Length: 193
Image 1 (cartoon, rainbow, N blue to C red):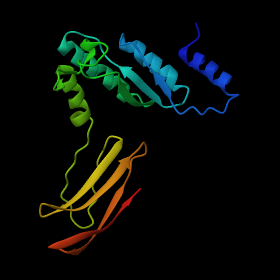
Image 2 (cartoon, rainbow, N blue to C red; image 1 turned 180 degrees about the horizontal axis):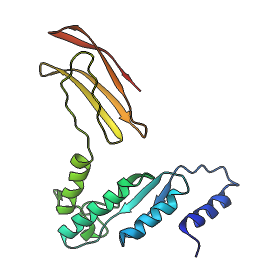
Image 3 (cartoon, helix red, strand yellow; image 1 turned 60 degrees about the vertical axis):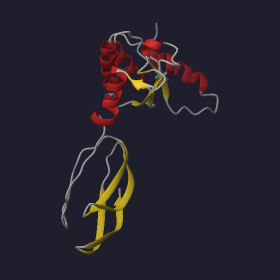
Image 4 (cartoon, rainbow, N blue to C red; image 1 turned 90 degrees about the vertical axis):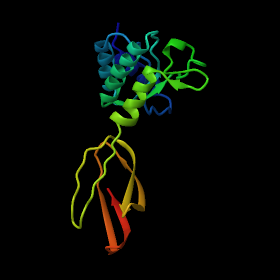
């Protein structure tokens, strides 16, 4: 049987006579052996398109085992450079096609152990929150996850400027230009890039 990459390239050559533009590869992988998942991701990454994992769910009755499996598979997916995102099949046991795969339970959609693990990863482990006190001419270097950010410039406990920016594959740099007196500073501009 030809590899997943070969089968995809065969489809690609068949479609090359059309004007369809391929932006990404969508993959649904059964949660089995993680070496199998890693192998398939590596194969599909050779095509050179972004990979999106879709319809992720883990049908496991034991909430703690399910939480561990979600943590393991999400770490595997998000650590692969070709994976650009993960979409869950569902999240609430009230409307999931496989209620044991839900990460939240009940009418109030309360996160279960798996849901708490997913929240922990997305809202804490893989989020960059930094706070620095800086002085004139000082440079601050930090590592950040790729994604969208909001810079808040504070003075005496009050926000004096807000700026949105994005960190991509090549990182980013910000230069904040302040003026005014010590008791009344303001941000002239923020240079991004």
